Length: 248
Image 1 (cartoon, helix red, strand yellow):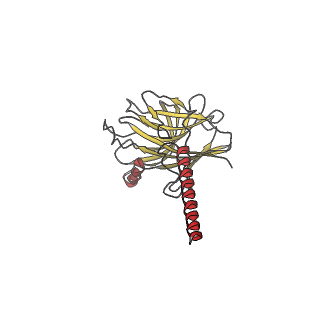
Image 2 (tube, rainbow, N blue to C red):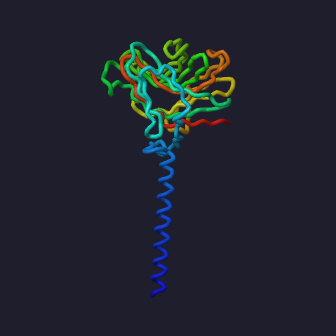
Image 3 (tube, one colour):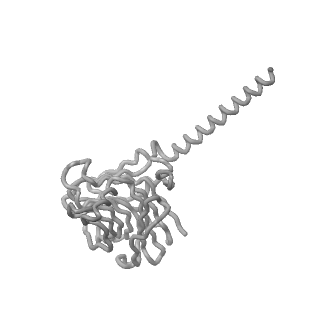
C-alpha cells in the first residue's frame, strides 16, 4: 500500500512539473512576441511573424504617430488637407526577396468622424533614396461608388504620379469595401528584374495582382521597403501585425 501511494505521489509530482514547464514555455513565447501580441496564426491558417519595431524611418510624418506598446507598429494618420502619404520605410533586403505583410486598417472614417473617408488607404511599398514610391494600395475610392485595389507610383509621398492597375470603384465591385476594416494579406517581391505584388485570403494561396520592371519608375530599382497610409478628408488607423522577409 505504501509503495502504491509513493508511485501515485511521484506520478502527480511529475505531472505538476510538466504542467509548470509547459506554462513557462508558453509564457516565454508570449514575452518574445511582446505584451498582448495578436497571436501566432491568422485564423489558424497562416503564421504571423512579429514585425520589427525599430530601424524604421519616417517619410512625411507630419502629425502622424506610431505606438509599439503591444509589440507591433500601430499608425495613426490624421486627416490631411490633400491626399498625402505618411510612411514607414527601411533598407530593402538583398534581391531576390519577398515581403509578406498582414495589415489591419480602419479607413472607413468611423473613428474620427472628421469628414468623408474618400481617397484614404493603406499600402505596402517599394521606395528609393530619391523618395519615389511604387505601392500596392487598398483604399476607398474617389467617389461613393466603391473601393479600390490598385498599384500606383508616387514622385514623392505628397505628389501622386499615376496608377498602374486598378480594380474596383464601381457599383458592381463595392463589396470589396469589406477590406477597409479587416486584416489584409499583401505581398511584394523584387527578384532583381521585376517588382511583383500579390494578394491572399489565407496567407498560403497567393494571386498576382501586377508585375513591372524594377526600373520602370525607379532609376536603378528600389533600395527601400515599407508600409503606411494615405488620406485626405479623414484619419486612417492601421496596425502592422505581421512582416515576413523570405528569399528563394
